[in-house]
Length: 127
Image (cartoon, rainbow, N blue to C red; front, side):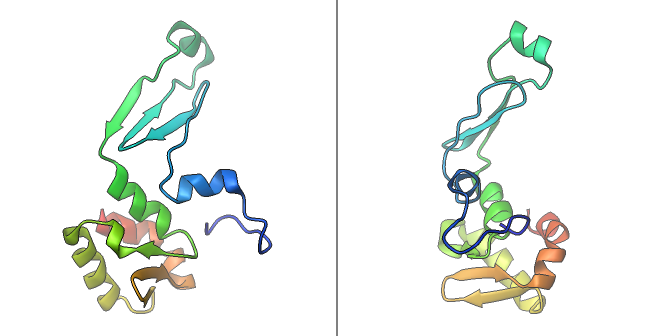
């Protein structure tokens, strides 16, 4: 992931689950979870969490946006077969019009170093 570095073979297995569309369970105040196509969040305020220790916020169908956000931040890039045809077409059009920001390779789209610098703005256009 663009903001974390590791020696080859020493990548964080814990953090990698967030960036590779795996389910994860967060427990406690301010914790977040993603199970299937749903994301959950617990209250960050400890006293409120004690009063109501169950998720207070839930979003459905966040998987495709999450996939774009997380996979484009990783050096491996995004496997375009994991996104819908509409999103894929939009992404590939964006890749063609911004060749300095992307590397299309086989079935993947990866960001260049410049692409990573502008990725937040790019994602606003794509999502």
